[in-house]
Image (tube, rainbow, N blue to C red; front, top):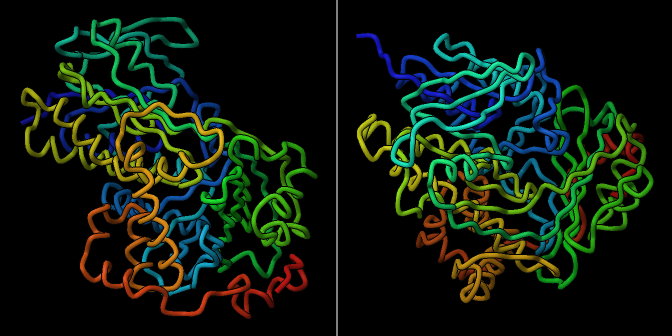
Amino acid sequence: MTNTRSAVVLGGGMAGMLVSSMLARHVGSVTVIDRDAFPAGPDLRKGVPQARHAHILWSGGARIVEELLPGTTDRLLGAGAHRIGIPDGQVSFTAYGWQHRFPEAQFMIACSRALLDWTVREETLREERIALVEKTEVLALLGDAGRVTGVRVRDQESGEEREVPADLVVDTTGRGSPSKRLLAELGVPAPEEEFVDSGMVYATRLFRAPEAAATNFPLVSVHADHRAGRPGCNAVLMPIEDGRWIVTVSGTRGGEPPADDEGFARFARDGVRHPLVGELIAKAQPLTSVERSRSTVNRRLHYDRLATWPEGLVVLGDAVAAFNPVYGHGMSAAAHSVLALRAQLGQRAFQPGLARAAQRAIAVAVDDAWVLATSHDIGYPGCRTQTRDPRLTRHAGERQRVTDLVGLTATRNQVVNRAAVALNTLSAGMASMQDPAVMAAVRRGPEVPAPTEPPLRPDEVARLVSGAGVTA
């Protein structure tokens, strides 16, 4: 029998493409609607200004991408993306000191956001049941407070308006999502909203890596110490395709990085807790000027808590929970949300209650990422918050003491590190930290000496001596 059901996905970014690929297995047609005109290759687009900064696809998200779109990982690696083992492929100065480079426990896919988005989009649109409608804006939701039946849209070039009916509408339009406003027009009350705003500002510059360090080079990161009582300043150097390094520095309120080239270099060298990233880029060739961004607030809309929710509408991705990008959780959390919706479709198909159940499942899917990001950010000076979450209010001190104990032990205990890395890459949930073996390892404490210098390996230092001028 022909499947006559249809879905409309608002937003053609990472979350939109992943959910479209999943929905194509459940409906006869999927229409993806976006305001942008999409580039023909791995180029930046207007609707994703944050794409200029470093983006990490953690293994917890990468496995889901591969499950939904088999072959995507190989295509990314073939285009020059790097598969970096965690923690062995990192040189990381954490809040608790240098991380020992234990054998790989998880991994990340490191490349430009433009390459990642383009590759996922190309793989998604191979499915003939998925159609992409560009340069089109959403004006309204069709239906009423009880059921959404589609959307009304307008072509940005012709000005023509039309209605697009659908059995399911999924909003993946990100931080600028119109769902709150569009639902109000249908009589749906506003959702509870919480935010944790550390005032983080990002600044990014691309460099040509020294030729000897263009491949098989670790990701290098210097993180703030959230316990220090001063603004949190960070720096990360990530190898990406075409022999380039993308370098992103960031600082919370009162410690924002400069926007000029000289100030950027000075911040990477002197503004963070160790000068390693600044030393590495000192003799690398700059390819771009500095790009800055302030769109970093942790913000969550609790559509899942509304007393009523219309059938036929689901909101996911940054449109429901957006995170401080410094933790790299946005794309992986969105991927988990897609699986949450898939599970509800598998259980309920299009029976009554699907949308409400899916919205609640999505809230569960993003919760670990939410706690991981906000519990650190809330401690920085000048952080602005609006939350009733007891984990971030009356229990915050107790949670932070446990987190600090685990974080310190993870730098020098392989069992604890494996568990912490699985959690931070969204490959396992918070409950995994309660495993008896992990808890016993935490009690045992560190098992190897603390590195006193950046744990670069001899071959890595050798490749840098003539190029980046790093102090070994």
